[in-house]
Image (cartoon, rainbow, N blue to C red):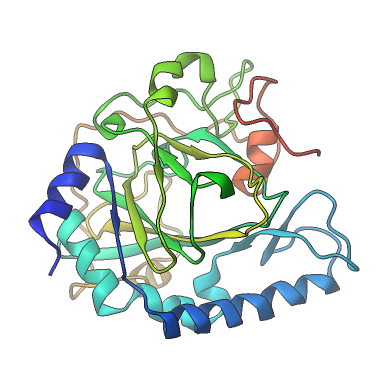
Length: 292
C-alpha cells in the first residue's frame, strides 16, 4: 500500500522518492543484464535502435549514454514495470487503470556522463490529460556529485514553457533565462540504489554531468492513466493496448482535461534521443553540452 504521505507529497510537489522498492538481488540481476547489453555496444560505431552513444564512443572503448526502450530489449525490464509493487504505486498516483507509455535507461558513466537540459516531459508527448508520470529507478547510489535528477517543486501545476528554438523548431529544452527562479528552487532526487523517484509529466527537471568517479544509471519508465491518449495519435492499437499495466478491456473514450499544450512541432532539426534534440538548441544551455 502506498502511504498517504507519499501521495500527498506527489500531489503537492510534483515528485516524490520512494525508498527500498528494489532489494539487493533485484539490483544485482538488473546490473548483470545492463552490463551484458552495454558490452554489445562494442560492435557498433553510431547510434541505432538500441543504443544512444556518448561523444567519443569507439568499438575499443564503448560509451553508452542511453539504452532505448529497454522493456523491448530484455524481458527483465518489462517484468519490473509490470510488477505488483511498481504498478501499485502508479495506480495510487495516477489512477487504477494505467498504461506504459515508454522506457529508457540513461547511463551517466563516471567523469563523462552527459547532462540533460531543463525540460518538461509533457512537451515531448502531450496527451488528452496529464495523469502521467515518470518512474526513475535508482540503479546506483545517487548523490549530488554523480548527476542526480533535479526537480522543481510545484511546477507541475504551472505553465508549459516553450521548448522551441529561435526559429520555431522543437529543441527539447527551455531557455534558462525564462526559468532561473525555478532552477534555483530545484531539489535533487537522491538516495541509495533500489529507491525510485516518481515525477509528474509537467514537472520541470534536468540533470547535470556526472563529475564523480561513480556511475549513475537511471532506468526510466513513463506511465499514463489508461484514458490519457497521445495527441500525436495511436498508429498501432494492438501494440498500444499491449502496454496496459492494469485494468481490463480497451479504453477507447479518452478523458479530456483543460491542460495547457504546446505540440513538439515543427520537428527538431536534430532527430534522435533527447540528447541529440537538445544539441539543436541555441547556445544557451544551462548545464553545458557534450561535444558533438
